[in-house]
Length: 367
Image (cartoon, rainbow, N blue to C red; front, top):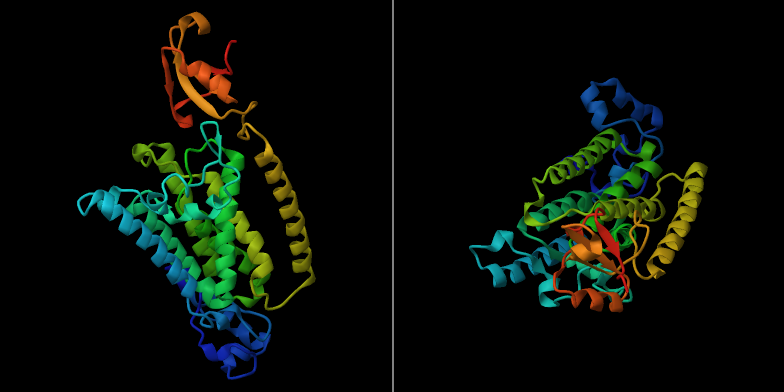
């Protein structure tokens, strides 16, 4: 894989500059720059660096313990619960994970009808342990292993675990702000994208200390391309046949959280003033984003970014006398009294938010 290939192959003996290092790892910048005089392919994977230590000299310092544990727990929870529900014949297409062991309590939801779940803060992390099907869990495991192995080898278990779970929480907050009516957010994609962002943060603060920086840029660009291709397939209804909708706000939230967290917690081999300024800017941006998120989440009824009014229940109603047209309308309510009114009408269906469109929408009730 491109991510693992970008990690280099230095031995653990190169952990401290000048102690047990090979001449190629501890040579002067002028000596290292000679690597660029070779063929272009070699210079692409081994660019010149500055300083006594490269980031690749650390990639074997820690074993990927957190990465392995995260993969085993996620896959194990999905496999055990999916096997109980679908058996071996239907195993691949069955949802499984913590939500099956703890029904209705672990998936990330802001509200279920007009029932408020904003205070259930454990959901911001627990939703990562449920996956829609085999394809979903395996794709996330691939991202975790490809990106987590290198990052954990360099930065250690605690740093990677913190960034990963911060990405999971950041993805949940991003989804809750952008579209709080999303039926249920599940999967550890937020953490996966945080690990990608963590590697980009590595490049931002250790660009000249990374021999394989150009290969790493190519690998990160390839993963971004995969995301764009998946979005195109989803827009063309190639992925939507199973009623599974990839959450773009969650992916973006996890990615940005990974970048911001990585700039602060990643090992910085050569601290520069511009990097301190970047940290100060990102900290101010984080405080502003946190304040905005708190303001949005405190509001009830919940309102998506593109909506002019909030609501907590949606249905479809047929009433030509009220609406003046012979068609079904989407009705949205901000409180239980409105919900009770519509449910007493003869032709009303409770539907999922994505089954309604902004066209022919009616807020509240006529009384």
